[in-house]
Image (tube, rainbow, N blue to C red; front, side, top):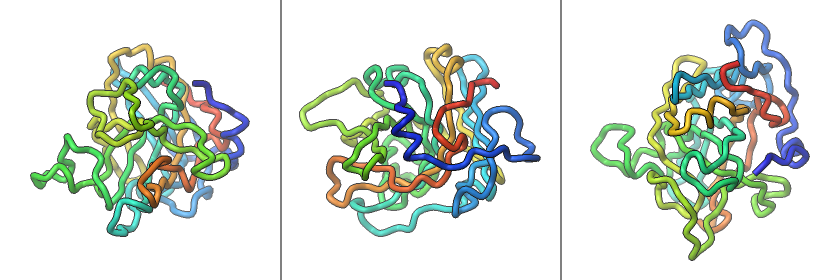
Length: 246
């Protein structure tokens, strides 16, 4: 699926200015001051590769990963904070149906639920209690007016349908994968190393950088997970100007 530039420009219309003197080279440079929380104020986004392994990098104006959503004690209405790299990679390359939507790598935290049932991120012996810890997902996004006019949502899986899904799909009725790629944080930056079966799929990709908040539907029903607050966009217009290895 190709990005609808007209639709997404209206959603992510933020100024794209060069971040001078950031110390981060290549990729997408962005100005600070576009987000209310410094931890989500993007100044740099980049993807590089070595063989079939891609390193997704993002830098912000504050301390990366220092802010998380407040716990509300239930799934419905709970929030998800995220650092996201939208790409033009075909969703088929990571285990979904071909051209299912906008494939994005997301690093998320959400204290009210756990969606990585195969992994114990906090190493306490319980794989079901660590949604608060930052972890990675592949998500497939599409415009969904049920999330709000012009808003994006994670694509729902209609009841009774059985689309192609990654082996590490966590069982939720949405196009989301929990592959276990562990994000690392250092001062103003975060990185995720991701291995691809098809190295060419990432080496020719374009990308952008986004920070956002998502919300689980109060009824815990379709649409299950909506983008409700775009904090910052590296390019300013989600035009995917980033080129891997540049």
